[in-house]
Image 1 (cartoon, rainbow, N blue to C red):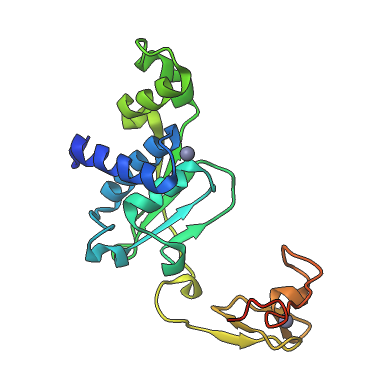
Image 2: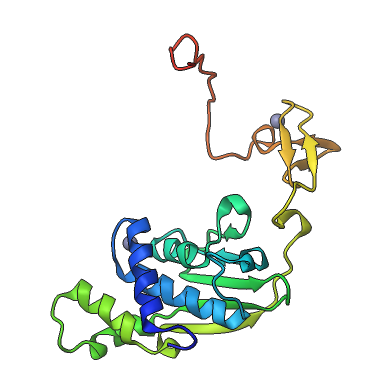
Length: 211
Ligand SMILES: [Zn+2]
Ligand SMILES: [Zn+2]
């Protein structure tokens, strides 16, 4: 395992499985994907070191491996270093903010077909898959593309760069997420573009939940 010892890998995998809640094939893929991604963009130890500020990772699915990528790299939604694009694809893009170099790493379908050939000795299917993904060379496990990512100014980590006020409900909308409609500035709710409906205000005092 290039630039990282096997021991690093096992330690990261154990930590990632602990945080995720179970050890699964997705943890193996995610940990290996993250180690590769960091190597590709020339960063290391972003989890514990100052390099965390140089890294942004885009993930394209909200499944097991995503947690492993977050664990190994240390990127977090709340730090704006983890970006979620809901594409349903097992892939992640690692961006070095300092050098602008970026690599998209995609988990391959062929790795699923190849798995059995790496573990002829293991019968149980889920442990076979997990073990196979540990042994498989990276070029079978992943397809890698060097890409360019133009991160919008309003997506950068750091202090809030823009603030708007919804002209309909008064909500403060940060980071350029307001919607301009017929000359009016609106929040997503007032624009009619949210995931919830029929909001009904809850009185926390009456419900005895306020203290
Ligand atoms: Zn899992
Ligand atoms: Zn509004």
